[in-house]
Length: 348
Image 1 (spheres, rainbow, N blue to C red):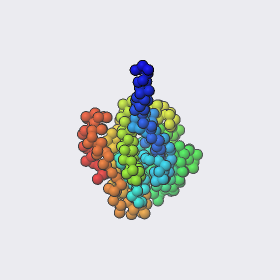
Image 2 (image 1 turned 90 degrees about the horizontal axis):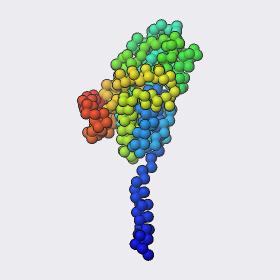
Image 3 (image 1 turned 60 degrees about the vertical axis):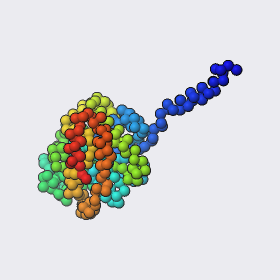
Image 4 (image 1 turned 45 degrees about the vertical axis):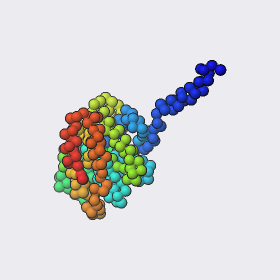
């Protein structure tokens, strides 16, 4: 038997072992909830389409579900994360402390209080029907904030729960079911073209806070601390891609939520100009205080005022990523000043 023949079996074993070593690890299948088909979810679309989830070892499935579906999915383990409005996340996490907020990547939507053509101003909504998806959801809270700017309270209007997202609220307005409702861009652009009136917009008031947060279940984070890190990193890369690549950002959004491309481009430009997506996603102390000071009702007010939110708002992951230089590596050294400023303003 020749030397080459004797070595053949060993060589084959080495080749097989080498092939096994070079095989990429299988992607972990996870589900992420998103509570609204608006710009809030834009980075998730980009992370999915650009392969950032895969880069961090995740096969992510994005599942839509309006409040309170997202909370239910997190609590049941059906979803590992949701990008949720801060107020709803605070209310849910203060129930029993089982949830945790690990960052805030989004400041505020272009949210307009749209009304029928016969309504001239916000004050004229007194005694009229105002549509929301659910009482206590984000559109409800934003509407309450805008009403207060014009001297109205939640008791001054008739609330009509629609039970669906922005498209359902728009349909309720155009069908005459409600006299006014909260509508995000670019949907309200089309309503304006039809003659409906934008009475007020949350983007015009810096003291109306409407951020979203990364919401997880505490037990899931303890069991797998690498998972939230992978998700936050993938989301951060998507935010960078948003600012760097308008064409790709529009393409990704349109795949998941078909809109008029020209109208969506207007939304993109406004988001980019105002830095709507946070490069360093700390939860600000001012936004937390706003939610506590503007509760949905008396019961929620009592619940939130007695709860220590330091037990459910955790910046340790963002702090560590800052310390390790992740954001500076991703966005460049100029981000250092923003890291220091956002850290100083964070809720602690």
